[in-house]
Amino acid sequence: MGTKTISIREDLYKNLKSMKREDESFGDVVERLITKKREANLVDFFGVLKDNEVLSGLEEDTRRIRASSRFRI
Image 1: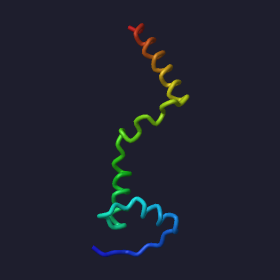
Image 2: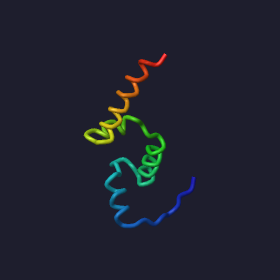
Image 3: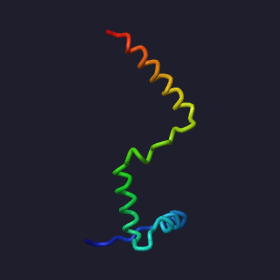
Image 4: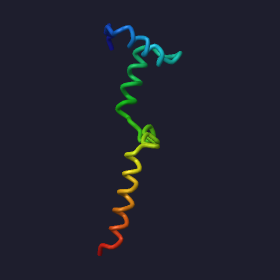
């Protein structure tokens, strides 16, 4: 497998370098980040809506829907 040289802005380089683990190459970091993005885990989003108005609205709507569905036959 060959290699390619790419150009990135200095701020992106610093950001990438800060994500780099001691035993990783920059290519390894890019691969890890790309793979991680494709393999999104729901656990990563746990608590995102905590203390958010949207969450309280969803909870109220859910209660209302569940209550109304008990009476349908």
